[in-house]
Image 1 (tube, one colour):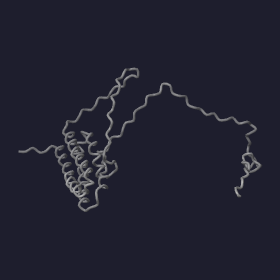
Image 2 (cartoon, one colour; image 1 turned 45 degrees about the vertical axis):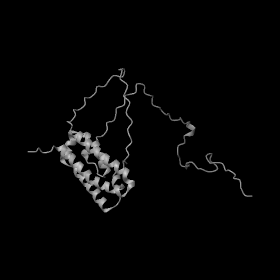
Image 3 (cartoon, rainbow, N blue to C red; image 1 turned 60 degrees about the horizontal axis):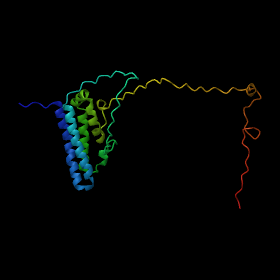
Image 4 (cartoon, rainbow, N blue to C red; image 1 turned 135 degrees about the vertical axis):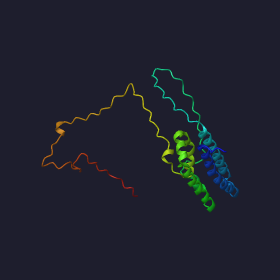
Length: 220
């Protein structure tokens, strides 16, 4: 009596089947369009790596939560941080549904792309995957680029968690706030409006009126 496949094994086979139909259509396109061969080769290799990463990550036991580090005093000696590895730029676009826009508009290709799109929607919203993502949120890093590639809107359980803002340390020597004092006016400059006051009149008789300039005539 054969044992029933585990949930992560069934999900891996489903993901592999979604890529298999697109794999056949991509190979057919590469045979007719030689210029598309490099992109097809990159895509097929990427799909294989996604399946391998998903199967490996889903089969591992869930990691225990990381312990919260205690805050170290400012005068404590800390080890220098390790240099981070430079991140390789992705050869693919980050635009939404870029793969569907890249495919030629043929009936066969349209059917295969639509089938992969809706199969991926059903895969992402399956109860087994939702339960697996709740136990292993790191699987979302593998599936989010695939959803973006095929134009699948991310459901709530697949969205990345909001980043926590780092709390800034209080400045021991804060700069004093700049206070702008108003310019004191002379009592003679303050005029209380009365019946004969009609506001400021701009004109030749006012000192704010710009002087007239004589413009030269550039006529011969």
